[in-house]
Length: 231
Image (cartoon, rainbow, N blue to C red; front, top):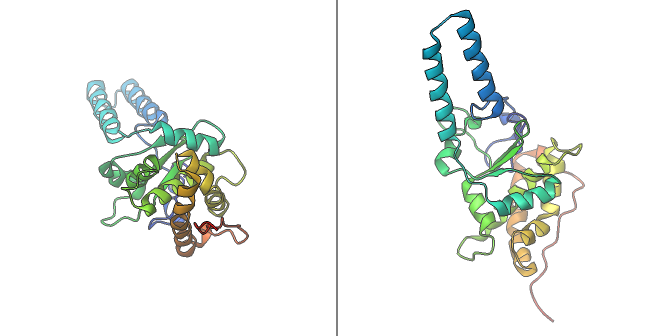
């Protein structure tokens, strides 16, 4: 996303819905904007500086508390590989994910599986999918959770990558599904497990491109699942 410009990987929100530009209070730009407002108001004596200072502190404290998240080193290493630069990957709690201002304030907002903030340069992934990607080799987690978590992580990493197609959902998603096996193996999967996860990743990919045509790259060559049998 671009400030936040949607770089979603499916879910129930299309890319066009989330292309709003938001200024996060917890971002350096957001904090600096608040400080400038405080300085300007104090100089003009429009309101009491003490009152404004208190309001600023409450705002920044609230933003900081609302922005608590995990940054799993494994996910950041894998995302950095595909982004071809350092990548910040945020895994929020479910409550924080639901409260994320990107989804708006309607009673039943549509949400995606992840997004990339291209102004503040970070990736945010749904908590369940973060858990799936982190514990890729854990058979206790369903295949869909582990496979979709991997696909979303690689997808968002390509949005973070500085290449000419970074804002093109179709090109990005094509790269994500084509490099799914590599991503899964970097997350700890054996070649056999990566192949076992592939059908679920292909199903998640098919869902995206079916519901949201802007994610479909007509000439994308999909990876093939290998029949797991021996001669």
